[in-house]
Amino acid sequence: MEEKEERKKAILKEVMEYVRMIIFVVVFVFVVNNVILINAKIPSESMEQTIMTNDRIFGFRLAYKFADPERYDIVIFKYPDDPEQKELFIKRVIGLPGETVEIREGKVYIDGAEKPLRDDFCPEDPLGDFGPYTVPEESYFMLGDNRNYSKDSRFWEIKYVREDQIVGKALIRYFPSIKKLG
Image 1 (cartoon, rainbow, N blue to C red):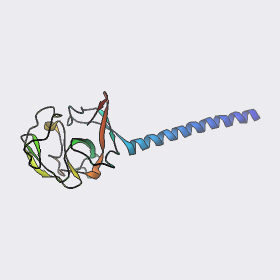
Image 2 (image 1 turned 120 degrees about the horizontal axis):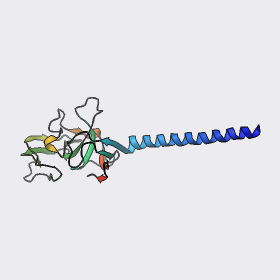
Image 3 (image 1 turned 90 degrees about the horizontal axis):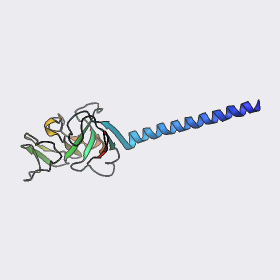
Image 4 (image 1 turned 180 degrees about the vertical axis):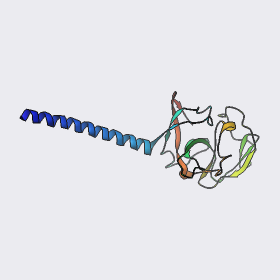
């Protein structure tokens, strides 16, 4: 009888260890996924050739807690025209707070500069004239790398992404292969 009780206690102890381990793993994954990393799947061709349609990426949620986004960073953010702020987009930061962005013949000029920004990440020559747009404080102007096929700041009703709408900085593509971003 005593041996049977000991076995029950041992089994219960082992089950409780598994339950603790499962709870720990669930809490750990929840914290990592909601505080540290963002896992995203790319739905469109707007960032090609840098990030392809259906690629999977990790973004770092804490990247902008102690630093501001910089020009050319690839960021994940809440789509400004989505009133519920549930839809996430990924684009490249082009215009910084207080700057005036103008696109002439597909080339981006900041604050009336004579020389355009570099666009060597674009898969083809961008087309079109847009702007000028003056970026509000604590906001950013975003463009896709595949500019001729990107729904970005040029076409949104709300042209700018506020700092508080930025979810994280894209760090690494992990599927279909590993590639450092930005």
